[in-house]
Length: 155
Image (tube, rainbow, N blue to C red; front, side, top):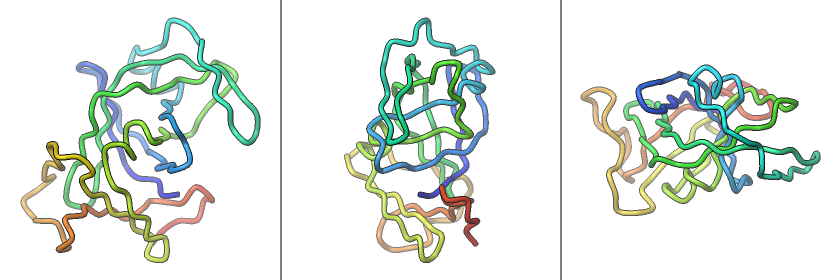
């Protein structure tokens, strides 16, 4: 699973971070340290999240996430992110089906250390980060993964 550069926003507060694209997750998660830094702590931790390694409680916050791709910025819609309870800490944002995989078609090209993102729904799609156009003819926005979830660095 690739890890990409991201920007999370709540109101006027923004933080750069890393985001794991997790096609196996039904929800998206915001690390507690980012929620605290943005003043976005949930009021309660009422949602039980089950993982292969056990379960934990989480609270919900509403925020926006932008993926910083090679030549574009992909802005995801305003979405619910879950913040784990105090005993659980995540090293990065986890983007699951809601909102990423509901919004975009994601093509993993692990043999190249790349990921492609294309429109799933007809909506605003990828604002250019600078003036160069996408590098392919498929309509997919591309990014080089910074690392995989296994910790191997992509080229």
